[in-house]
Amino acid sequence: MAMSVWTGPLIIAGVTAAAWLLRRLGPPQSLVFLFKQPGVRPTGPGGTLTRRDILRYWLAAWAISALLILAAAGALTLSDRWPVLSTKSQVAGVYGFAMFLLAGVGFLLGVIALWHALRWKPPSPEQKEPSKQGDA
Image (cartoon, rainbow, N blue to C red; front, side, top):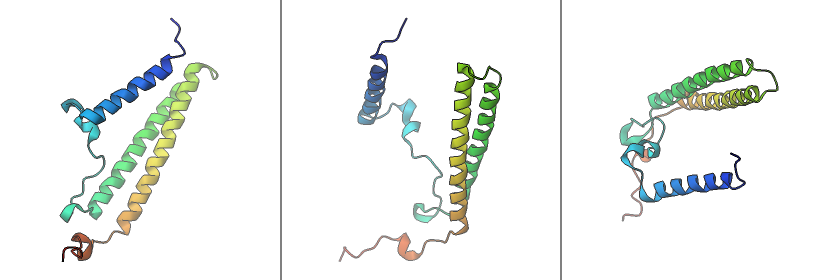
């Protein structure tokens, strides 16, 4: 069965409508985890990030990078199992390259987090409390 010219646009419209309905009506209980704020939860006073939180972010970024490097190596190994110009080889090669690029982004995020952790200073009392200038 051949796909119609309208198959792609109809799939895009359906996914867009489903995403809009989820945002408009709220997610069902089984999908609540998709809408939570990702990342490391701040554990400092008043919800501020501590050095330990930033280091946990660094560790998570580099662990994910390592997993992506392993996945990229696996995909590139799979691409070598088929003839060079076959569709399977090219698809596996593209997936491997994309995972390698994502691993690079994760590594750079880890470097930035480590830099922030090394330069971290506790927030001053002025930063902890909101200013009361307009409440006179």
